[in-house]
View 1: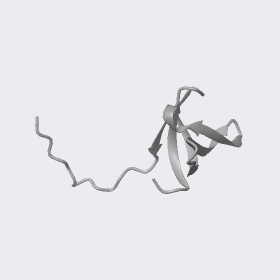
View 2: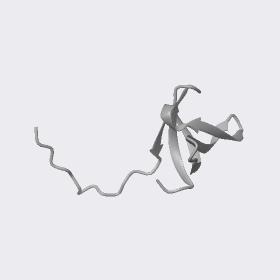
View 3: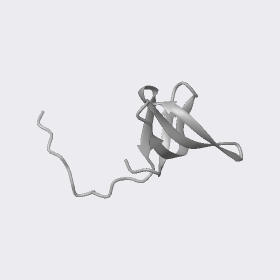
Length: 71
């Protein structure tokens, strides 16, 4: 994932479920640096990689690409 980029953030430690944020960087020390909106303000947060899921806000643009799955 390129940085900076807009993401949806899921983090059980902070009770975030699909919160909109901006990923600034991924630290080699094990955390994401993300700007999150709380009320009318924007705050820089450090969220642990092991307890946080990030989803890119923009969908991939490969609608014709389908992988075959053998069952």
